[in-house]
Image (cartoon, rainbow, N blue to C red; front, side, top):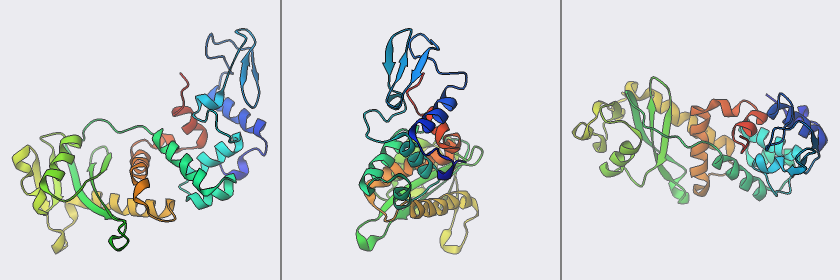
Length: 264
């Protein structure tokens, strides 16, 4: 894993390590794969096609007034789960600007598609504090075999809300492990197998894995945010699920930039 100290102090040095990772066999132009390419900080130029293109734009930072070193430092701090305040000291941008960029990075993450199946665990949890009018309810499911998760905001604990979540994310016929909340009692009637445990009596065994997901999510939210804010939560939930389901994206900033870029 890179650290800020590993990054070159100048923009041209940062461009070199980015291009070496993205073009391991040498830089080629995006039109005819010509190898006669001139590299500049703001653009690249193919001397055969006599055309230039922006690597920043291909990497999702087109027209942004941000240096190459700031790009690497920003993505590095985000991958390491640093708070916006900690990233501020690395990149020298304002707090609000960092927040905007973090939201843009989250939007580049892949959206989970496809339902989970087989043996799954479900549960609901509250995030934030009710006394500050800053609390939301989320529902999650984890598939035991693959360890994949899905998490989504739900309006309430009503049976319709629970079944709506399951319709979207769990295949009918799956065996669901859940607590004994009243909204779960009729799940067998809508096509699922069901094993219940009573949390009020200290019986957590069948849902231990989903309880572990909630514990990790609580720590993640606290660690990556100075203050819990509902307006950032959809992006944070998407990031949390991606870190669990697509771990390859978070090995280092160069890998993230390459895998989420517009490069063909």
